[in-house]
Image (cartoon, rainbow, N blue to C red; front, side, top):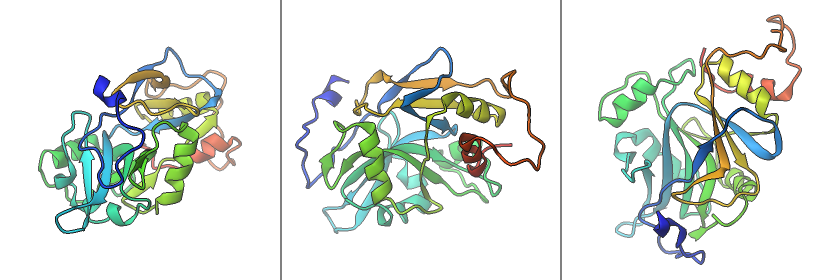
Length: 245
């Protein structure tokens, strides 16, 4: 993994690296609040780095979707290869994110995603790429920049669509987000330090992974009536996201 840290920060605007390993989070003992972190739900999909660049053979813009082992999954996801290259600016670019396969009601189906990536057919399901970080832009690495700046850049260059979504994050209210996603049966929450650089191939405590126990509800929270307005912005955010039942 040391070779991941020796990447030139000057970059090569004519070509992206052939492969890259994602930065990984270390587990946290418990959920927490922090003004220095952005908190995001984990949707239970497949981690993927999206490489978007012109093909030298014909000039067309191509998409590669590499998993944590470097395997390219793009051939199994034609809905993404035909749309994502036209939705991202500042090319060539590399995005970090998560592949999911929601059903028509917005519930994530990991079995459908696994079947598709194994070459199977998944009628009624369409893949979505949830982007949460930007590693390369305009052919130049931005991994040395703080996460906050990378996320702002990511939001500027992506045209959101049904196939490509920039994942919203929550600053400060990590506990509220944790309990909200736990009640929805999601896998957990990732907390990323806003000042952190991107460390390819490294597991770092700059990023923390907080797994949930499905159905967990804090004792101090009393459920609101169904027609009551949502009082906390973080809970309103969760209600707008396509969470599982």
